[in-house]
View 1 (cartoon, rainbow, N blue to C red):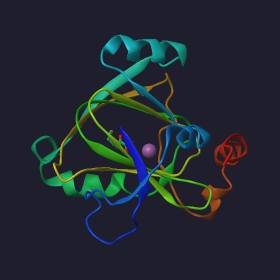
View 2: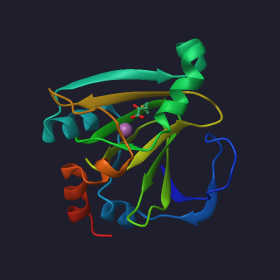
View 3: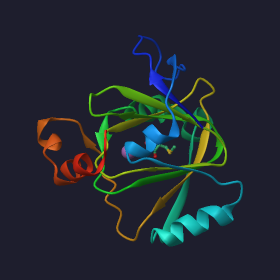
View 4: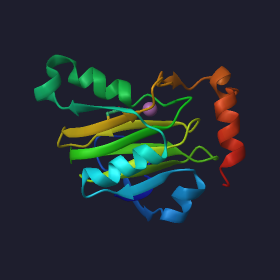
Length: 172
Ligand code: KMT
Ligand code: NI
């Protein structure tokens, strides 16, 4: 895992967009983001148990797996959105970026690799992309009744109660 401020430069979303300014783990914690290194599935199982996650699936995002729809999917994942539940991802192979907003609407880019597990809190605006290698395999963990629907950013979504609670809980 590596977290840094997004450079806001034009170019492919899959480029690094690394401004050179790192973001430390305390700041991620202030945003409500949890990060764990899980070298084996045992650590993932423990986190899932503690947080009452009962289900999981695996997704491979690559042109090989997705064929013609790959480019569209990658663009869709990159639409800024939030969820009314946490988003937990455990990286099984490959790489990808989660971009998360702070309260000033700056983007923090989080680069994930194999064995990284990330928990994004409900209500945080974020987006996802593969990198230039165009390959990631990830486990998605969810509770029995996942509130996974992405709510794309718009004025009504800013007023969403889960967004409001996130704002109150995060300390930046
Ligand atoms: C997401 O939440 O955008 C995804 O599930 C993308 C693939 S998982 C790394
Ligand atoms: Ni999401």
